[in-house]
Image (cartoon, rainbow, N blue to C red; front, side):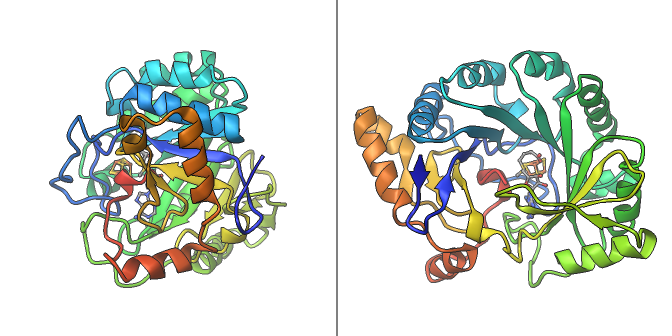
Length: 329
Ligand code: SAM
Ligand code: SF4
């Protein structure tokens, strides 16, 4: 079992497999995209599989594949197949924007993927275009249908933005009436790759809940699972549930069990740090698995207490303006 210097168990890895994306979500990256990483900067699949194997041996039980958009990376199913076969891994899951995902759903199911996070910020096709700057709403909805038809648990990720999708909060809650999905409202974070100026958070978890209560005063609090980043709720009579993720307010750091690897192999101990170790370079410099493991252990014994400490350390150096596509969410 992996325990950090604050006594927190680490058992969950988020692996971002590319920085590239076929959408341009307003809160994530600028309209013209990012300065994409070159092929040699990206970790290869072999490097990713080896890193995952070492981490699973050390105690990681759950891996989430994310990006950028995982399905824009060539032969992504090969990577998923290899990772799904790692001895000791209990759960493989992914986060996707759903644009290219539908044709892969049956294969995901046969690999044992039981749940998928689908990003969907609105139920209105025009607003979808305004937020993502791409006309792909129908494909995302087809992915939602496909996942439900294959009995894969769906968590819908919705970033709440002043002036963009406040009118979607109630319709998205209403979606949980007949469909067994978990709709999770996420506070907007500053990781937008300089898409726009982020000065302060307008919609925090308290305001999001207040807004839901105006229409659903009988909303009930659920018991949050251990290590949950969301406050979870249920509307009586609804098949699905609601989550609110205080991603900016950072109320969940005390039980943080997750680490991240960026597309270029940076290990992040915290969403808000700027990377503590480059795994790709360690591997390319010829390290054995034992040497990699020992460097990882050292990194895990120096984790920051919370996202505020990480952000403080970082602001002293560079500030926070990278895109979430280079972190993975
Ligand atoms: N492209 C995939 C997708 O959108 O689902 C996976 C990568 S995306 C970076 C992962 C998650 O990060 C998405 O659910 C997205 O909504 C969320 N995200 C991106 N930028 C964010 C921001 N500035 N604040 C909060 N969440 C953000
Ligand atoms: Fe792409 Fe996901 Fe970022 Fe949207 S949130 S631009 S879909 S990486």
